[in-house]
Length: 499
Image 1 (cartoon, rainbow, N blue to C red):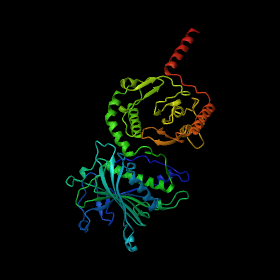
Image 2: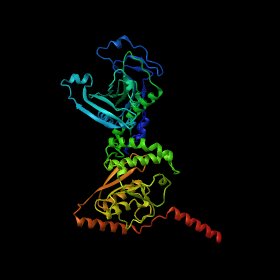
Image 3: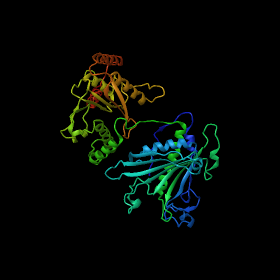
Image 4: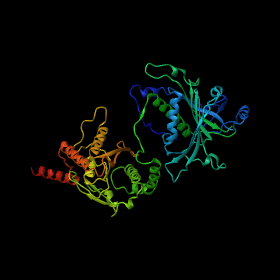
């Protein structure tokens, strides 16, 4: 069980690193305890658990018993812990990376008990969720349907996860590799510091929030069944607890998401198509990759971008599309494409370029042409649509952006610059963070105009604004091609030899 990087950006008021350093888990996987009654159970990581006590076996109506795996103190409140759990319920991929997302089957909320005494005795069932975990490898791994029971009162929050086992004879063996081989497991929160956790953590700090409660992981085990944990499972569960702690302090500090995925394309549609294209083309193109660049990185990045584009185009396949590509220099990989794609190796001068029969204008790391792509599209016709993936920060004159906006990186400043150009061209701008292994993974989409087709006055105003922006930016100087660079270098060497 692996864990992802937290997709959160820290608030500056409190040091997140200082709170992370306070993480001090108490583990129970060598000497575990019954989470409800405190009965001892020794778990050896390599052998089955020993026979349980008679008292434990005789619990009426309880075929499973809860055992604590590990726990830690947290500065979060019960409500803040519940916020984390709510997020994890709808985005399981944050905790289980082999999963692409979840399909919600049902979500039922239950009222509070009528008697206060019943509420105090134990946390009542407040919510029941049934969801399906959707694997990324749709052709290899099965979908898991699980029921999630949420028990909650002022003192405690318990979130129980129970997988559905369609074939009772196979038991837990039918679960895919990414799902824990347990009848049930629970993420829990208890108000107050557990006696098992170092009490010094409860002390107040001048700058850090004090500890409010205890986080824990519990397993539901059959009393008479053997149980063992591998070192990999111990590591995975330990990282889950650490992740729970980090996310709880994120909520305390008021963190916000750094990136928004799946804005333009449904996640389930993307991952389903990506799995198909990766299986069909991935290994083949990695093996045949003729460039000097990292084959795996570039092949799978291109497959991811192609997947997103096909989904953006409502699933139309490449075989049904006509188009052409322009690059200043031919690439070795072009020779492997065959005669299908129309690829041109030439320098494009964008100032007066128009493509009246082109529907989509695409720029994938197009360097100097990135800010010009929406201009070329806007000048071509009303229905022209734009996708650009900015990379190197070239502005309209062909030079690089030199001075970032205070408080922003140069890349962030450049993305805002390209957005400004697109808006000047009369486009509603959509921003998508692509699922590619690159820090420069932002795609800007312009598929709707800011004015009506019949509004000729607005159309004329947009063209005037474009001309003013281009004039203000200065003359565009296209980059010389690699071939021209080589010829110039040879000429200089020859000149030095003659002098």
